[in-house]
Length: 314
Image (tube, rainbow, N blue to C red):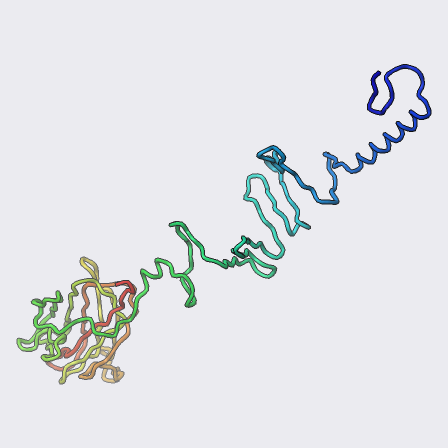
């Protein structure tokens, strides 16, 4: 004799009163059990939901058929706290108070907070020989320095760059001095010699003196002193590299030629040392002082020195 799922026999004939009560009880039990099951069409779970592996090695959980124009969201309380994936876009982790990454050794980092979106790392970062790119130049003492910042960072050197020179072109240090003209005893290199000291121009109304350095240098200032008997009114400092035109680094005007004596403005270079600052963004090999207006028969210089901007890795 067979018995169906409701407890009745498979034979013919009517059911007894006892059978009817039994079947009603079974229906009541089944209804109660169904009420505790999750509906695959959509439902709410009021208790914990644990998924066990048992004898399996893998158990998957999630949405497997997301496609174009579809979105999946795992809410963590409300829409302000969720893990969201719009198909074709990066996965977003949205959090009202930021996202914190923690391991058994402590907090690793926190991304954002209720008031800002900054990332805070609370332990060392090991880059495994990878680059960190697109950093801004440092603003405070503890900021990281970029390669460009280091490569272009210069320190003002206040020690004169040019040593004592014994001749115009036979200097072991590699410096070469030339001029538009010079006195036999007052040669151009004297402006770089602390013992001889004076250079006289002897022929030209406009005249110049030039220094060729052994390598390109970038300067932040220079110092000049005229000779004892004459004054330099209008002049400029120029610089260039090989085969380039001269760049004007500094222009000095103490007299406007042709407008009378009232055009003197008490600016001139005499036999006292004057220092001038320069804002130069590159290094040069050649430096020249071009004088366009001076007084006296033998105007010139008794001192000239350059002060460099030195790269911090030099």
